[in-house]
Image (tube, rainbow, N blue to C red; front, side):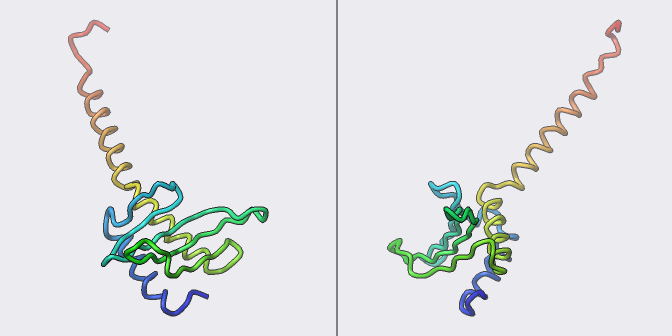
Length: 126
């Protein structure tokens, strides 16, 4: 069960992540993403526990000095994992700017296709 004090935080982060582009930041660990609000940093991290080979997601709160002061952790066997994993995936896509990147690729393809369509020169003999 997600602790009561985390429920409003998770709910607000889910909304903010889906509506605020660039809310989350990349970290030096490719599986960790962070957001800082009022001097407090929230880290979401996906990893595998060995030897069980179980995928886990952690959600940690860091104080202004960078010390972890609290956190919740779920592995894929727990019901809460699905919700926290969905937030992780949303944070990852937000930090990596996936929507913007896909939009840029589609725009680039549109330009190439448009240019190709106008490159048909009627004066060419073939």
